[in-house]
Length: 517
Image (spheres, rainbow, N blue to C red):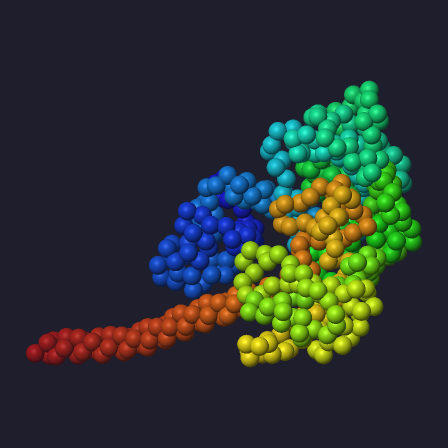
């Protein structure tokens, strides 16, 4: 890893250090601030912004990590940034780029690219494509779209069982069933549409598919797909020239971490559904859908945003109100007193590190009673991070201390976690991504495990802001001291110059007197 760090650019090192901070990693010298306090005796952690530190300090910090999982994480990140830099070297300026190259650039610039496309490409069975000559790559507008299906193996890993590739004319370039190289535990037929009988007599291997794709992707061809990193992981192919339709489209109202599904994009932008709810996937249909979305964007037939819509929520969920950011000193009995209506309280498990707040559900007999109770809550109307209405309710419990909590109707995002059996249903965090084939097209890919985590983290955000302000104030004090010393030195320089002239004049006068005598 030392060689990778030595050649990494400043921008990449800064982003990696920030990600390491976010994950709470600690090396042999502690976390980032602890490292600075021990490494830099002069300024310590008072200048903690990585962008204001030299490459040497950033590299020295990253070299303090020696655990295998940390080294693997850092190696993937560095390789991902190196790959992005390589593609950028092959790209034209934004003013002179083609529509196809622009979509490649937008994919690479997405905040989640570095993590999702950090492949273990140096590992066993992986292949890395070559972009080819720069002149050909910069002129290339050839695009292929891919989609894969995977099965669950006995050892808990996944194996590729089908791959489909189409060109921009939707002509099939590759459609192969693939023989798994491990014992299969679950064919996920309800998702993949593939059974054990379908694979009888199949001889095509992962290696065979890789050879075919290496030929197809030569001369700088662009590979497109929806959540394409999942397909490339299944194929064990590291290809840098990519367009990810989950990156180049977004919801008009919501954070970038909430990405639209392939089915929602097709319904909103192309006017058709890739499949009906509950129907198994068709690999070829998904590849064609991804290509159609890319072409529609290239030809300026569609916008890059779609409206944020909520899927149907089960009646049992609609009969609940979500209460969150509840102070821990407020008991469930207190909640029964202050929230209007007849309901029971279900306390949600507290996440590690959530501090002095918790969440709960107020469960009513039906959705009508839940809706009426929400209307009767006397609080300030606000919106959560996804634009959904909620109320900030302030009250005084028996302790006599005024406090507040948020009340919101149950929505689609609150019941995602219970359904992991469909493709693209699960939520994704920065490093632990559930397979694309375990996720449902009917549900959005999200990196936040809880839509209300935004509010649960407000206290932490405020603390960090105060800490940042403190660091900034300390830094300003250092800068003021430096400016004062600079002025003092300048003043002394002037004084020294004046005294030097006096001494010089004195010596000259003294020398003249000696000559006269």
